[in-house]
Amino acid sequence: MSTNQQLFDRAKISIPGGVNSPVRAFRAVGGTPRFITRAQGAYMWDAEGTRYIDYIGSWGPMILGHGHPAVLDAVRKAIEEGFSFGAPTEREIELAEEILSLVPSCEQIRLVSSGTEAGMSAIRLARGATGRSKIIKFEGCYHGHADALLVKAGSGLATFGHPTSAGVPAEVVQHTLVLEYNNVEQIEEAFRTQGSEIACVMIEPIAGNMNFVRSSVPFVKRIRELCDQHGALFVFDEVMSGFRVALGSAQSLYAELIPGFRPDLSVFGKVIGGGMPLAAFGGPRRIMEQLAPLGPVYQAGTLSGNPVATACGLATLREIKKPGFFEALSERTAQLAHGLQAAAQAAGVPLVSECQGGMFGFFFASELPQNYNVVMATDKERFNRFFHGMLDRGVYLAPALYEAGFVSAAHTADDIDATLAAARDVLAQL
Image 1 (cartoon, rainbow, N blue to C red):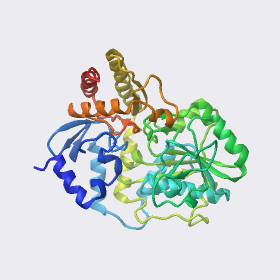
Image 2 (cartoon, one colour; image 1 turned 90 degrees about the vertical axis):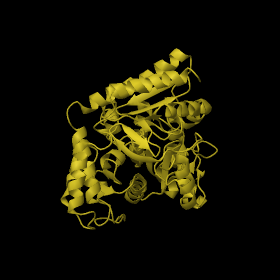
Image 3 (spheres, rainbow, N blue to C red; image 1 turned 135 degrees about the vertical axis):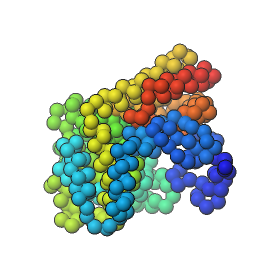
Image 4 (cartoon, rainbow, N blue to C red; image 1 turned 45 degrees about the horizontal axis):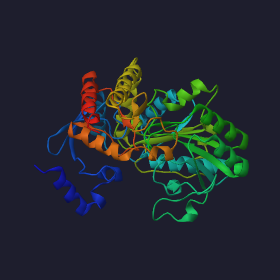
C-alpha cells in the first residue's frame, strides 16, 4: 500500500505540482495532500486507510453525500445506454426543465461541462447582447480561469485590473474592471464614468472563494439599479451557491429581500452535475436566443449535455426538491457553524462563522469580513494550525483559509458532534 507522501512524490514526476487543480497541493497550509481512494456518505478514505469527515464535498457538488443510492441507480442506467453521443437526448431537456422550474429568472438554459466554461460563455453572451466590451468583477470572486477573469484589482478607484497569471496578455484584461466587494461607492463611480461601455457586472452573490462572504442587500440592490439605468446586464455566478444555499439558489434569497429582483444571466455548476462535469448558464429568452444556432454569439461543446452527467445531475436535483430537505440541511450546517464559534469563544480564540443552506465559512477574526482585503488580513497561521489539527483528528476541511466549506445531507448529528469535539481539542491548543 502506497502512502500519501509516496503518491505525491510519484505524481510530481508526471503532473505539474503533483495535482490537477492547485489548491489540492496543500501549498497554502503546508504538508502532504491526502490521496483519496474512496468515499461514502459523509466520509472519505485516503491511501493509508484513514477515514475523514468530509466538509469539501468535491467543492460543493456532493450535497447528498457520496454514493447516494438514487444517484448511483440513475448513473448506472445511463452508462448502460451509452457514455456520449454527440447528439441531443431527452435527458438534456429534462435537466433544463428541472433547472428552469427552480429559477424564475431563467427562461432558457445552455448546458456546458465546467463552471469556467459557463462563466466565460455568459460574459461572451453579455458582450454580444449589449454590443459592449467592458465588464466589472469584484476582487475575491472567482469565475473560473478564463483569461479575462484572471485579474487583480487596479491601483485606484475603478481602475482596470492587471493579469494575475502568466500567459494572460495585459490587452486581454484591459476591458475588465476589478472593484471591491460590497463597496457601493466604487460601483457607482464606475458606472458614472464608464456606464455606457459596461456590458455586464458579474458577481458571486455569496462568495465561496474568499471563504464565505455574503454580498449585502444594499450592494446587490444598487448594482441592479445601476445596470438597469445604464443598459448593462447583471450576472449572478452561482456555480458554488446554486442549489446549495437554497432550493432556488442565492438569487431566491435576494428576491425575498429586494422586491422584483432578478439577475439578467445566471451561471450554475457543482450541484446541478451531482459530482459529474456539468455546468450551465441561462437567462431570459430574448438574451439566450442570441446564442448560436439562433444568434451571432458562438458557443459549442462536444460533451455538453453528456448523458451520464445529466443523469447524475437530474437525480440530484430531484432529491433536493423533496419536502424538508433544505430545512434539515440548513439546521445541520448551522449546528456546525455556530458550534465552531462557540467552541472558539470558550477557548478564548477569536473566530466568527457564517452559513446558508449547506454552505459555511469561518474566520480567525473578531468580525465577519465584507471584502477580500479583510479576508486576507485574518489569522492565516492560526488557520493553518487549526486545519492540520482537525485533519489529524479525521476532519477534512478546505486546505486554504479562502475556501468555503460544505455540509451534505449525509452528515449526521453524530458527525457534527465529533467535528466539534475535535475542534474544541484543537482550539484549546492554538
